[in-house]
Image (cartoon, rainbow, N blue to C red):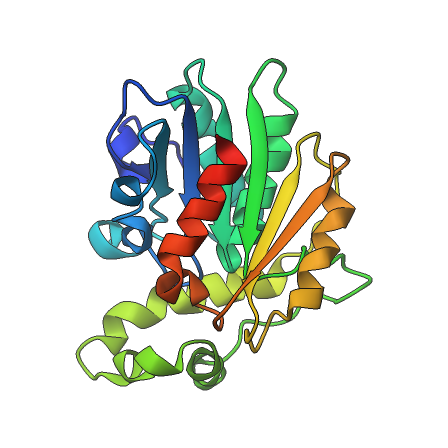
Length: 249
């Protein structure tokens, strides 16, 4: 995957000259930067919100999706480094985005002088090592759709729509395949604190699972549980964003 010259292909969000910190957001599997479209308006002006636009969806529909988590993280890291200024960075990821944000954080944490301040993960336990959970094949479309009905029952009909399904499924298939293969060889403890968030009724990530992120930081883990299911960040958006702002300001 080549690094594009145009920042706008990978990073969505307006620059905020007076902001003191930049929050980079990573979407869930099959998701896009639009999942965070109103976050900037709901956060304090000292926080600049930027969302990552993965290839293979929305206006990048014609581009191939990332084949591996490592490929995705390498490219996003390079884009962020090219776009960096002297402001500190924080990363937020939901579901698959948690793993992507962790992999990017690992890479940024190794860059001398880069002011990475915090990793915030959501709706997913820490990555599993190969000996904990061997890599598996890409799930079938039937398996993916069944999983989505559990994760997001309110919007399940969207995935069955005959006009939308051919547009939605390629990114979902690629992302679920990427996750099935993703098993880091080791867990590098980050030199920044980690915050893990989740819904108290999440059917795939119980609040207890969030504690596993303690394994990837040498600077401490905070856990915050909100009312809601896997996509609690939609129903509890205001509450979540107030909490994130308290962590960053």
